[in-house]
Image 1: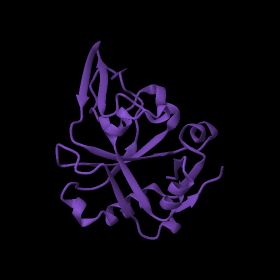
Image 2: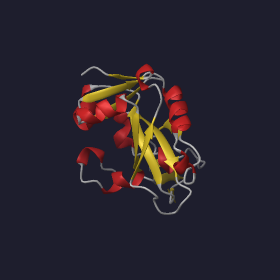
Image 3: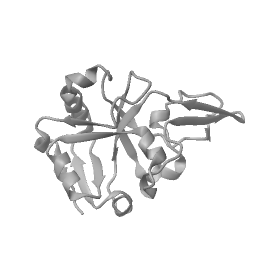
Image 4: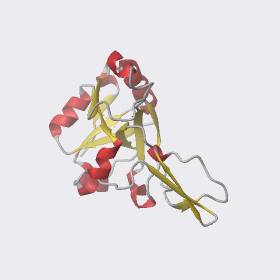
Length: 179
């Protein structure tokens, strides 16, 4: 699957194209003052079942890298005009996992990924689905078509503010998107 990563800073795009992949704490998006990236309910899974609200709060520190399955003017306006295209999301995941530094292994098992579900607070059709709060957002964000890469810490407190991972041979996988 082809994915897109948006940047407001050209230097960050260049670093990404050179294989420097940065994961940010999920809680950052709850607390940021940057309106286009703020989501007060990040990390909280909420579903409705027969009129009853079920909430799941994921407590372990989680680091994410957000991408999108689409690239359009609206997303560029919100997240930045500089776009990187990842030609193959599955291969990108493999390379990030193989590049995971040994000192991170103490805190993380592996990088995982998945499409975000825009089902927060929605009815669960009579039965409760697994509350995967890492991959759940409010329907208001559905135009983002977000695909996330994430690491869940084994610790209860964040071991790092962010994670930096350097992948091999990025030029065969990451290119600069059109503007």
